[in-house]
Image (cartoon, rainbow over all chains, first blue to last red):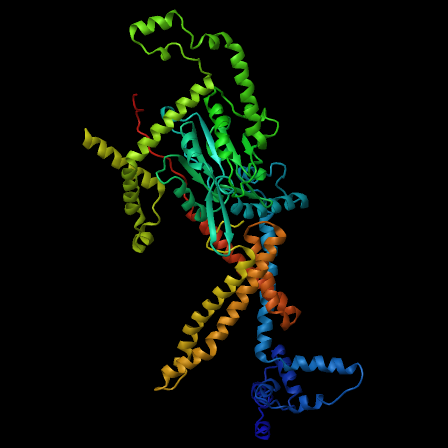
Length: 463
Length: 152
């Protein structure tokens, strides 16, 4: 078969004499070409080259000859040349494409670097990228500076919080609570653990319901979790199914990621920082607002009473007529032990108060003229001459009463609230693919608007 | 500690990832080789051809997927353990090592190319994922308050 193939050579030069016969001596390049071809006119070029033969499993003469053992250093050279020859045309093509690709990549890199180090487009860009001290111009330093600023801005796109204002503006004065309380979720309010038998389980910290319920009368409670919304949203809903305690919930999307640290920037909360208290278990996450931060030990899932013991301090803080909580928080030596420090302070305060009101206390519960008058007039004695109470206790009594009222109200209306919640879900939860494709995801603003409209209609109907 | 409660924590997740990837490969391989075997069989024996192709090849595809998934998960856990951070770079670095180690028998050049392209691939996946997360994130909307505060 080989011999048959070999007998059918196409001579490279055979056609050339025809063109030559046109004989145009003026076209020198053409003539040159011709000479090149005609030079190896005598060499027969088989139609099947070695590549094809090798692929068909036929060993050509040249290969066979090179298979013979050679001596010394020549051997390596020979082998490498053989390997090169064994490359099929497909391989060569692939190699060529790879080279094109490398060249394009190199060119693209250079072009990209050049483009990124261009002059500032505008003053705004310069300010936005924090490059005030980098001038426009073609000095290498300035170019490098602009390049790095722009490159890092590509990555910070992913690490910056999604929104500029994380929360809507504070409610009108009449509805406003005195302070805002920002709580982290994992290892403070809840703890998740895994074991081989049960898989993942999440525990609520003891006293959590009371903590949220009690403090929600003084604080606008914001949950600011360190995990993605996808993972934490359901947990938050379960903590407060009636949406009575937790005003807002933010997640990892609202955090800034920098140098491997998750940072919760409270200045983006759209709230007065003087009226914001944040509790976290990781000092890094509140490192931008250390004066607002109370960093506690992470909870490991064992029984403890930290939440309940936190209440007196937070309650005290919210009931003081203060403009700025930061100096008060800073007055504690070690904020991770704020509970103990505050209980010492509270004890001192009580002692002081008893000292100051000694005579009032001494007079209490003793028969006197007022008492006698009251008993004559049929007024219960205890309301006139009872032991005076410290303001802290009055506040606490009032708070507990409020808490009980709220609980009662929620219990009475639980079914109604759940029904409303379900209806809303039904209305907006049903997303057909068609609707999703044509109208997009429903905007929360639209939902809020529709809700407000509906409420207005209902109010009108009630009139 | 990862908050994604659909996945086990680190050392255990390697096993479940391996199993998940294997079953994914087997299911995909059934479709792929079922159709291929069907098309490549003569009339009258197409069903039989399809099944025999599935029997012969689907477990192989599953095995390949499983090895990739298990290796990736192993590297992912290792990278997480070393870096002690949780971000997109974990997956990219793990992809780099996975691609490299699977191609290591093809020579240094092949290893390098495979590692880089695998890392790029995972980078794209992570980037698209994060982009989606940002796009889907919705601003928090406050309750609508009546204009006139209630009179007590």
